[in-house]
Length: 151
Image (cartoon, rainbow, N blue to C red; front, top):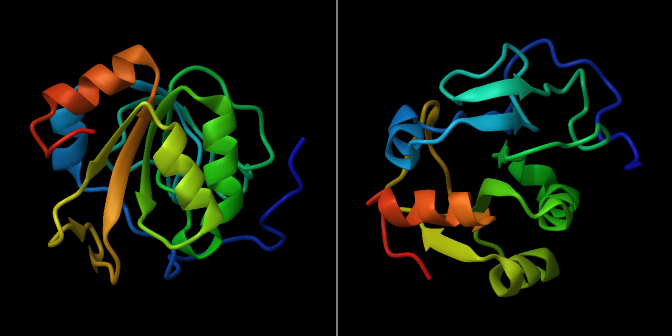
């Protein structure tokens, strides 16, 4: 079991809370079993059967089925490794010069750079981002989405 990431309760949005735009989920066209890093007030657009908020500490909780992850960008390392270990889902991650991103780049079954002008619900972020997928159905969703080129 992973050590708890969050030690204080989240009562309001933080600089890590960037909700994924609805058009990305519309383009993917799939329902996830679990959103593992959901904002405190629940999923805004994520089509998912269940979700973990900061109070649930999705990093420490059990993951099951097809997951969606848009992790806190200030603490991406542990989330990325956990996602790679689970190996079933789609994740939105910042491009980074780090070991975890190198490993994600090498091991994901499909990877797609998002448009450089991507705007989250709360606005634009300061770094480029990618969608990466593990699992046949998730790779197919990325490929059919029309969002961008899949490698």
